[in-house]
Structure formats: C-alpha cells, structure tokens
Image 1 (tube, helix red, strand yellow):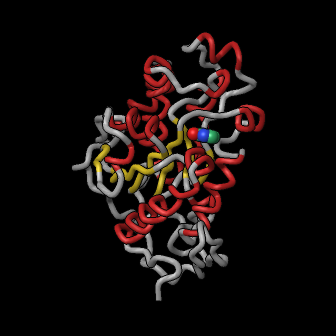
Image 2 (tube, protein in one colour):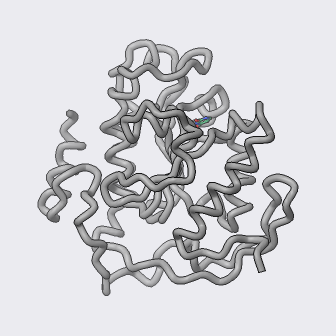
Length: 266
Ligand code: URA
C-alpha cells in the first residue's frame, strides 16, 4: 500500500473509521459546522427539464427532501480524492494496462454526492479524455441521470479499473484486485448513501458475487454504509435498447428509496 493512501487510512482510523469503506454501523453524524457553501445537492438544486430515457416523457423533478447533514470531514474530500488520484496516476500494478494507457481515469463528480456510480473500465474516449463515461455509453448515462432529474456533476462517477484494458476487454480478476484499493478509497472519501453498479463487472467485483446481473436487479445490497443497487451497463443498453425499460425501473426503485419523487409521476 502506498504511503499517502496509508496516511489517509490512518486519518480515517483516528476519526473512528476502521475500514476504508465505513461500516454500516458508523452513524452519519449531523455536522453543525457544514459550510454554507456546500456544493449543490441532488435535493436542493433547481432541476432542468428531464430528458426522456426511453419513450416515457419525464417532466421536471419535484422538490425533494433535503440531504442529511454530512460529517465534519466534508471540506477535505476533494483534497483527499486528489491525493489518491495522484497516486493512481503513478500506478504500475498492472503492467499491461500501465504500458498501454494514455492516462489513468480516476473519477469525476461531487465529492459530497449522495449517489456514487461504478462502471467497468475506461474505453478509448475515456482513455483519451481522462474522464469516465464520456463516450457513447457516457452519453446514455447522462440521459439516464437527466431522466432521474439530476445533473451529472451531482453524482460521483468511477469505475472498477482506472486504466483502459486494450481492446476494451473485460477486466481480469487480478486487475480488479489491483485497483480495488483505489475504489475503496473513493467510496470511503465520498461516503455515498447509495452506490449504483452498472453492469456485471461492477456488481460482481464490488459485491464479490458471481450472480447474473439480471438476478441482482431490484434488490438492495449493503456495502459499508452504502446501499447498493445493480443494473445493466449503458453499453449493454446501446446494444439492447429493450433493456432501457428495466433500467428505468431500477432508477425508479432508487429514487423511491432515496425519498425523491419519480419524474413523470404526478
Ligand atoms: N464504460 C465504463 O464502464 N466506464 C467508462 O468510463 C466508460 C465506459
């Protein structure tokens, strides 16, 4: 484990957190010192007109309950993420990936996000631009985010891998294992209430499950303090547009659990 990440881990431990992923029983403390300039939240942001995901028109998100207060470490999150990202940029744990990547693709979004998305691995566009989900699958993911009444920058988005596998092949177990420490660090720092695993690679690796993605949908899993929802990957939807419907069902399942109104209802 690299030194800076170890230091971050020690910081968490001294704050009473004993795992990278905070255990479910560590409460989310109210923070009276939360800065008034806290980034816009899913709940408080005026939302744009929603873009239909499939054929169902989805109007604006209705006002929703305010976010629970965050813990006292809020201010440090962006800095902590940057620290880990700097480590990732130097990572050579996977020789082949380190030798073929243009750059690492760490993650993007709100360090205070209620919802964290996990995909599989960067593709060619992401490798070029250094940001997850910016290619065709990313455009579809953006549509899904809008259909939920959110903005992309309100979510935190990352992948199982931070380097592009050549030819976009599926990440190996070893590669996922090498990158796991970075994913765990991102989850621990953002401390989301909800995680969405997009596709079987994300779901299988995060939850250490061999179950088919279709069987993991419409259920809640627990990972540390976060509730985890699994659904189909946007790339799969590009190849199988009929699967957009179950994905929208999954998003509604998530919105309801979050106490948010489902766009298009009422
Ligand atoms: N697919 C993924 O899983 N992640 C990306 O970042 C892009 C495409």
